[in-house]
Length: 90
Image (cartoon, rainbow, N blue to C red; front, side):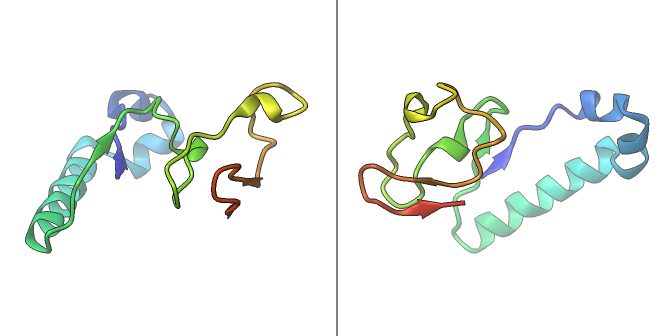
């Protein structure tokens, strides 16, 4: 799974624009897609707002952020346990 990046927004940042260019990133994603197809791996582009860090990689249950003291998902949350399968995520 790769994020569908907004390359035009990345290029607005002067520090990132030197490291990234549309051609380099596009070429990388084309190569990655080709390799996935060659080896039978599913290549998925996820929307940039897809909440992948809230989904348990073991059972697929979405994390309920309302159990947090802040009442919302924040960057302060570095570890959590799945209420369904009790797996630990960091």
